[in-house]
Image (cartoon, rainbow, N blue to C red; front, top):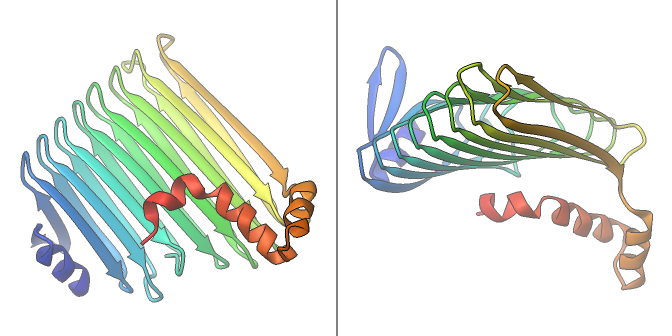
Length: 267
């Protein structure tokens, strides 16, 4: 964590250390934009003050074996969080956010791996009026064994959530992606959606997209959907007729599939 802490301090965040927990603080009504490039494992807490705005971009490098981050948002604060796992993906992932009154988080993550991957992304709406928008891109290959869970947990009224998960699988990938919207009895007037889109590039790849709703209040709007398809052979043929090789044509389609996420996480 030493290099990570140094980067955060150089970019203006106050970092404290207590009982083996490192906490990065952003004061109320302050703005900060930080970038962390790391080959170390991450174990970090961010606290964001009232009406503050924090933007974080993580770029993972080989050596990072675990990424654990907790975000605590103050009232009317905003967090933009981006993870670039294009070159290396931590095999163990745990990201959780606690949202306060009127706070907002926009979370974008692109993960490309051919290794085992296990993790969770959990967003808890603790107070009224919070918003959480999660966009997760998974580019899986090789013999990757992947299990991920993404949750918008609505525990207060008038909260908003949107989860979009895109998974591309090739080779002998075996993946399970659990998406869940959970709405507690007290969370009336919630508005929350979940979408899972899977694209297969191999007949041997297996992906189980599991969208779930757990709704304990009738005065809400919530829905989920899932789609699974294969690369369009006609589109591949069209691109090849314009001079691209089959590999290049597939790369163009892959880039298009992830464009809504990649535009935010790219360096």
